[in-house]
Length: 404
Image 1 (spheres, rainbow, N blue to C red):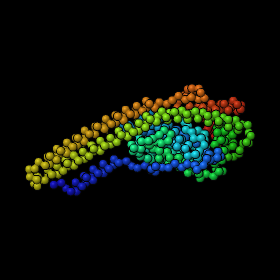
Image 2 (image 1 turned 120 degrees about the vertical axis):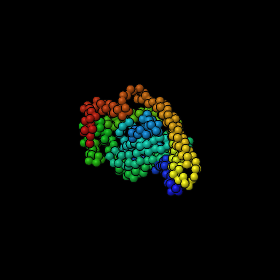
Image 3 (image 1 turned 30 degrees about the horizontal axis):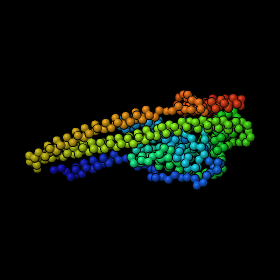
Image 4 (image 1 turned 180 degrees about the vertical axis):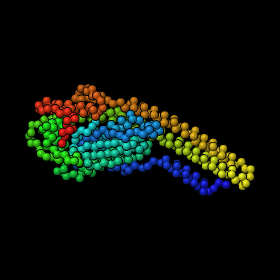
């Protein structure tokens, strides 16, 4: 008869293999409570924030072929997620202007994000925050798993299925900001302004800042409060803020248009992936049980003296082979689900086309990527400032070379 040790080993093997299908838990607290300012803060206490459009890890072949994820979906998420984080931060009352920018931008605090993984059930974001001084606040990975029920009651700008992730990121930013002294807050704001001035007019302002080997800035000298060139810089910075606000209107519209198809895709994608996992689990179970039956039948057939002419070994071997075959046939069903996921991805991509940008009431035909478009605007700003002041216009390469 079958060895007890062999049977136990097979059972344990099956349990371990099936158990390996379970996914790990995230590190974001459940039902995270947002930190809110107890009273309205003075303007001197508010820091402006830019959230750069996220980047993402390259999709693996497994993610594209087995999970049905696509580059089009990932590009949409790179815009969607920073906008939702912006809304989450704005509600706290701790910040000045919070804007999404397609590049570095110019603000007191810069937040950058990398999408490490996202499939509608699991989200992993790497977030880095740095202030204008070049001082890093933190760099952390946030991970969260959700269930289909978490998509019930989601509301644009207020609640996403992964809201705990956004709330936790916003809270971490508030915690760091609250450790800053009034002098540090003022210094951050001052350096942000001087860095913008040095970008627009390096010949006039680059000497006002010093940068050490670690990339941190300090004020070397301050221009006079009534400096006419500084007044012009502030006016140009105001124009830049208006353009960034226009770009944010574009991102906001994109976010709103994306909300429903993205939510639907995530829900349906989650169902498809869950169904695929169940099919694979069932197929694996059939295969393993069939293999166990075959192994048992072979073992029994070698002990004819104890079983006589019993046909049990043949039955076990034939039954096991049928189970293995059934398992492989069931595995083919996963192709149906993968095709459905791919169809959802294609449908989503078709619905998530970018919108046209409107700038000061006029349609602007921007070329290249959003980052290239914003770089073109920054170059235009330097031209505007140069024409107003008579100072030479510095190209982008020379500006970076001579930056403090």
